Image 1 (spheres, rainbow, N blue to C red):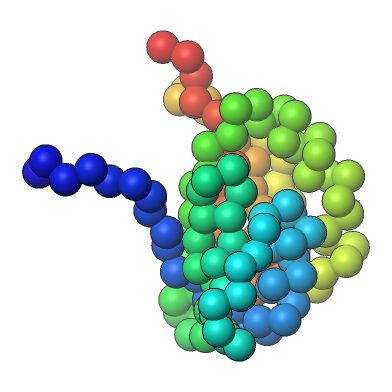
Image 2 (cartoon, rainbow, N blue to C red):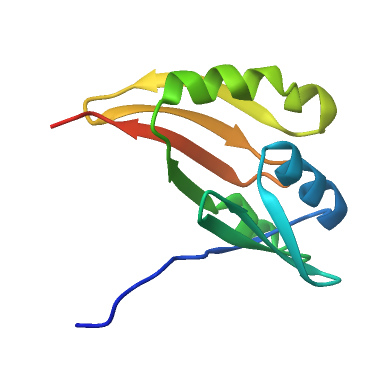
Length: 122
């Protein structure tokens, strides 16, 4: 293909749309409200759509990987947000070092698993 790709924007659901909107704003994403039940969240040109839709099997199997420049810095900033104390069901998993790089995990209020990772330099 010769087409130029400009972005990729996954659609994620929310068990409680209002809670998830608040969570992603606290996580540092900027929200653009597209409809009463549909928003676009972005951070530095990367983003996703959040919709007021919940299908347990879908949410339980949704994972998003977001590459960060420095996973240690990200983890330190993340833990200062106190998200598990503020939002029910939010879980943070510390950095795991693997052969390809390092990553930490965040389960959002609905259960979506976010991987925030840094690849090794090759």
